[in-house]
Image 1 (tube, helix red, strand yellow):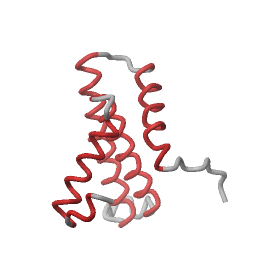
Image 2 (cartoon, one colour):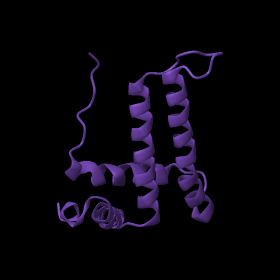
Image 3 (cartoon, helix red, strand yellow):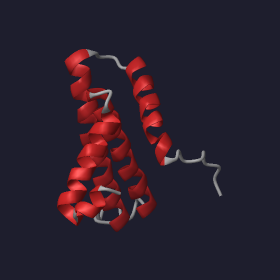
Image 4 (tube, helix red, strand yellow):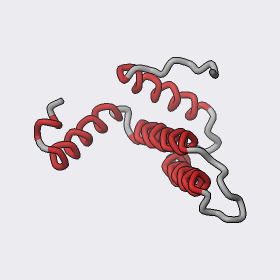
Length: 118
C-alpha cells in the first residue's frame, strides 16, 4: 500500500484550489491575457491525457496494447477537474460561488429542483 496524503474535505477543496492557483501564479512565465489563455488551454492537454489513458486501458492501439489502467483514467479525470477549477479561479476570485451557482442550475434542469437545493 502506498502512502498517500489525506484527501482534502470538500470544505477544504476551494482552499486547496486557491493554494494551487497562488503557486501557479507565482511560477507562470507569461502574465496577462496570454497567461490566462494558456491556463485555459491546459484543459485541452489534460483531456487529451484522459483520451490516451482510455485508449491505453482498452488496448485500442494494436501497436502498444494495454498501457494504462482504469485507475490511470480516474487520475487523469481528476487532473481535468483540478485544472478546470484552477482555470475558473484564474478568471474570478469568486470561483466557489460561480461554480456552486452553475452546478445548482445544471442540477435543477437535469434532475429537478430538489437537487438544486441540496
